[in-house]
Length: 129
Image 1 (tube, rainbow, N blue to C red):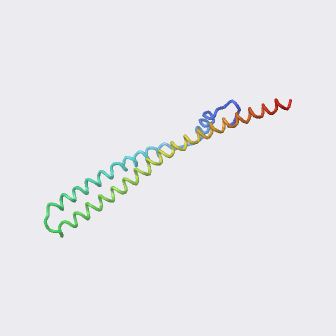
Image 2: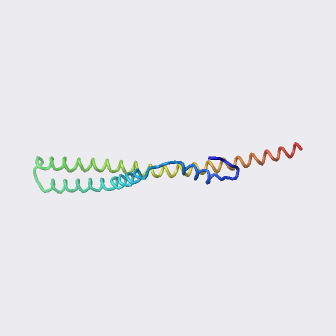
Image 3: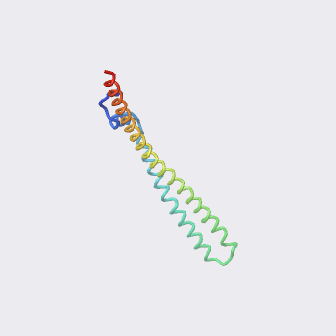
């Protein structure tokens, strides 16, 4: 990749991104895990409600405990795992966008700085003559 003075930051970024190889199946896997991150907490809430409904129908604590432990704790575990998956993949998507935007802005700032230094260099050279 050659950097000529006429190329802009966006063109250099586009050329650099063309060289990066990102396999497509990981994007499918990420979308699937994000959907699981949404679905697992819903299933967990349903399990907790089902366990509560089953336990509320009995009057003996000895009959209620196995229902609450099996449905309630498993439902709570599903909620925690699902929220973890959702946070991980939604935050990674946000941070990737933020990083790309930051790179473009920094490159534009560098281009402006180089242009300003070129103008200063020309002004100094003109004063010497």
